[in-house]
Image 1 (tube, rainbow, N blue to C red):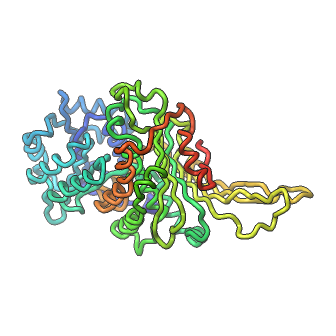
Image 2: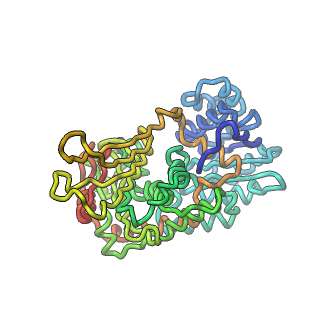
Image 3: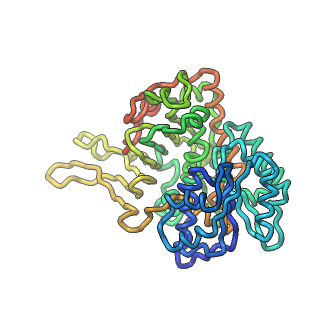
Length: 480
């Protein structure tokens, strides 16, 4: 979504942000610093309050001190700091919700943020509703933000949606995908729909293939227990990578409203072809970096993947015949998140029987992190008496033109939640369509089809990922 110019942005309404898991890393490192940045930008006022809920012993000052380490040292933070309070309790018991109700008795607008393990999402929403905390009156709102992972397969995602939507309305639910808070991700839509020449060639007549990469140089670290129960596919593909694929593949919405945009994205995810068991085995690659099994809280015999690469098809008129290659992994050569659109070769080579008979394809590279920008690769003649073509790039770097550093990526999402703009949040049908697209891979792997290859730390991943593209006469864009 194109962000409005800063000077036209309105201040968010008075509200209370209640963070379940308020003493955890997500709240300390990302959520509260993002709120502090919004305060500094003038997008929230002195009428925003924060209540952190946790099971640790402590008081208001203990919670504030925990936030101090990561919050910006500004006057605005000092003012906000004084409006942070702590509520100690066990959110698996009903008493905490009655205690919370007492603290919120005169608060009209409330956002409940579930920064908790996934197994608590459904029960917390049910308890909020049963305590009357999700009831809205005229001119007020009650909203709930749900972090990922939203389910661990199609059946569990459907069950969680059913559980939540039995307690609250879809309009009150904000399913978080923090990738969508990044300016460069939102810019995919602007690049497509604000530049007619791009949209004119954005189809199977001109595009050969699309690659979406989310590579991380870091390993699993201290998250062994979570990762060994999740794996790379569940952690990244049906949410982050599919949201990028939906932005690349969607049709122009009729208007820039949340429902119009989310409907077009849901159509893309719903059009992903369900692979047969044989295709799921052939078109999915799993890898595990060397040494993963020695990580704390990881099964010494674990076959969980820390790398996954998939080949998918989107069966729409625009994308028929264009393969989408997705990959993500830990402990790789470099941190690199990008979308690479490779265009088809010229229909007739005018340079045959010359040194430039085999021309590399034109590419449009949307670099999302790090070194955010856009590169367009194309061919020019090298100066000199011979007919020699060489690839060059037109490149744009955000850092050369805009100041986008120092943010957590949650600023936009929290601001939109306070305003009630659901554009950047996943709807129930998007969640379920994403899981439906990857379920055949999960089923095949559960039956032992699809071995887990090992790969070296600092490499580009397992050999099978390169072979996946080589079978089609293609190769991955270089990581880093």
